Amino acid sequence: MKTVEEYYDVIVVGAGHAGCEAALAAARLGCETIIFTVSMNSVALMPCNPNIGGSSKGHLVREIDALGGEMGKNIDKTYIQSKMLNKSKGPAVHSLRAQADKDAYSMTMRYTMQNTDHLTLRQAEVTELMVEDGEIRGVKTFSGAVYHGKTVVLATGTYLKARCLYGEVVNYTGPNGLQAANYLSQSLKDNGIELYRFKTGTPARIDKRSVDFSVMEEQFGDEKIVPFSFTNKEEDIKRDQISCWLTYTNEETHKIIRDNLDRSPLYSGMIEGTGPRYCPSIEDKVVRFADKNRHQLFIEPEGEYTNEMYVGGMSSSLPEDVQYEMYRTVKGLENVKIIRNAYAIEYDCINPNQLKLSLEFKKISGLFSGGQFNGSSGYEEAAAQGLVAGINAAMKCQGREPLILDRSQAYIGVLIDDLVTKENHEPYRMMTSRAEYRLLLRQDNADMRLTEIGYQIGLIDKDRYDNLCTKKSQIAQEMDRLKNTNIGANKKVQDLLMENGSTPLKSASTLAELVKRPELSYEVLEPIDPDRKPLDEAVIEQVNINLKYEGYISRQMKQVEQFKKMENKLIPDDIVYEEVHNLRKEAIQKLNDVHPHSIGQASRISGVSPSDISVLLIYIEQMRHRNK
Image (tube, rainbow, N blue to C red; front, side):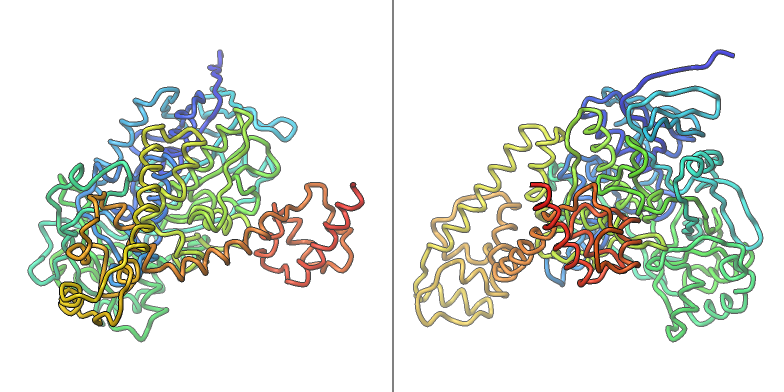
């Protein structure tokens, strides 16, 4: 039998959110790229919640866009409702979230990929890695076809040996009933890759016609639309929005769940995998938060041209009859009809400590990994890793240095550093609290932080980079002007201050000092600022934030300087930890497991103490002296 053989620079396995970003990045950087999917219907599939963004996840999407990724552009084209979360709090935690039309999101991403030069989209199941002498050589598919590749990116999501469960029912499929990938796991094990078994879950989908919205609270989108992509303005994407709805569980709901816990595979022992702590099933919520007599449920449309509604906050693996019983206790769902049952899904993923910060496997050169396969959860976390893995696969092909973002540069840096450095025994979810420098890593300034990097890599074109340079210059010039513009305590000034609940001036002040007042802003001061020139809204936003939080930002910048000192203290590749005197056994084991890139990374490994770091610093200094 004759075998198909083809040759590529980059091979991507899996076409979920991670795989799409990886393949697009590699192809846009000029590498001949092929991406495999078990089904064309799974390209950029949203098998769970019908939204992109949210708390901290919105930061990731903005960063993906700033680097030249696609997720932000795609959701701007296909959203049905947009909302900025946490607006009552400081700008560090403002997070954009958009409800998506699921089918449109998937089809639009697929269309983009099918019209990208150097990119081939292929439906086939990859079953085997081809590895020789510790280097990746390509992959084989179920049909026996051989695809040679200089690099491979694994982005298998939740498909590896997947099984979906509710009650005693077990379906050996991937999400949404799509085909699972049942063979690649063995090849990974044969090549010395350590696998974990994780779990996630999803709620039921219900028929819109069976819902009584009159007894629920309507949730509207924002009147002012903020795009995810820095390439878009509000007028480019503004559209009529579709409402979501809020309702609640109650004591009757909770009693039904408690009475049937023994029928849940979560509690009966049928489920082997570890689930996400921060996205628990309704069974977990009722058990863990027994003092709460109700939980929020969001009834969200799955798209513009479907009657399917998503019951956010009520994922479950209870039996079908119990699902009907408990859903029908909820206000507005008394006569609900279920279209798709809620279910839990188990799948194989890796211990991400096997990866470098570039997302390349330490033991297999040229093999990269991204997304839920790395033990994370969420579309946004997946896309962020996929983008970095795709960039670095292309960098490897082109003999260029890998892109490594640190914790002070991006949420993406925090995400990857946490995954590869810390012990993760459950699906990892990004949260603003994980970012030490979150005041600097705001979603509004992602372009200021990362677009120059995207330009240097080759994913951002010159026009976009020039626009960024103009924006930076305008911000700096305007801040300088405000700091050097003095305002006297005249009647016009005092009246404006009084009108806005601000203390009158006792002596002259600069406009910058007035902007810093909580009740005032750049826009409010326009009547007493005759020299101001028209500026883009994005420039004004940065001027406002940078002045109001100047002291805090300055302090955080100093913290980053100290952080960078530790990150820049690199650990030699040839270090033998067993030869470092006074290093504890636990530290030796953990350091050998992770192989940290720097002293900074070593200090974040669980089980490595400050005294171990001191010992390491002294030893590395001695090594340098010996090598001179």
